[in-house]
Amino acid sequence: MVARVLRGRHCRICLALAIAIALGGATFTPYRFQEIFHQNAAAVVRLRATILHGERFGSAFLVHPNGTLVTAAASVFGASALHLVDTFGNALAVELVASDQASGVAVLRAPSSGSIPVARLGRSARLRRGDWLVGVAYAAGSAPEAIAGCISAITGVEGGGRVFTIDAATDAGGPFFNVDGEVVAVSIGLKGARRARAIPIDDVRDFIVTAMRAPASAAADAGRGQ
Image 1 (cartoon, one colour):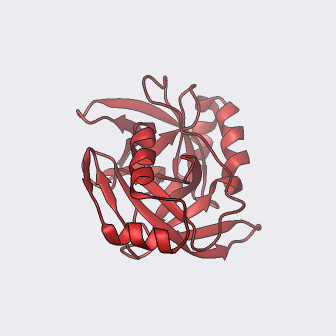
Image 2 (cartoon, helix red, strand yellow):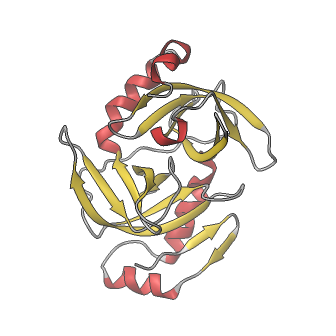
């Protein structure tokens, strides 16, 4: 499956992607892909987790002006400290509010959202195999990158939820956007070298909303390392 990558302000345009999307009848175009990335990249931040033998990096994205962020549970597992790291290396401590190992999603709280914009949450119920999405994450280095990929498989999980396999290798914790620039899935890790496993946003919406309203310090001990 062909993907096109945006790294910071640099874009590698792939004509094959545009042709594949056009033939598939999707509404993504190269211009729209760039637009989605540039409108939403600032909502995605780099997450650093301090663990027993060093550090682990992942991604997170802001979902509320009160500083609530969503990431992957794998990114915070076993962490003794969590920080958001900007492009200059400056770090901001964040608290773990709740971690749901069943779904693979975790919720964090920053003391302030600062200048980070809020990512809009969409609906994932109508997503099907073959639908194109744009993943944004900090796969490597200090600049976000975006990869377009389609949903190649949908599997059921215990409890009635779904897991998407998306042909776009994005870092754990990064959001997937639909053509309207709304978050419709959360990457929870890679499946092989070139695919991501992602949870549909509808499956974790209640968990996110409940955690968003909870005091961070009260829930952190219960959620950390689960």
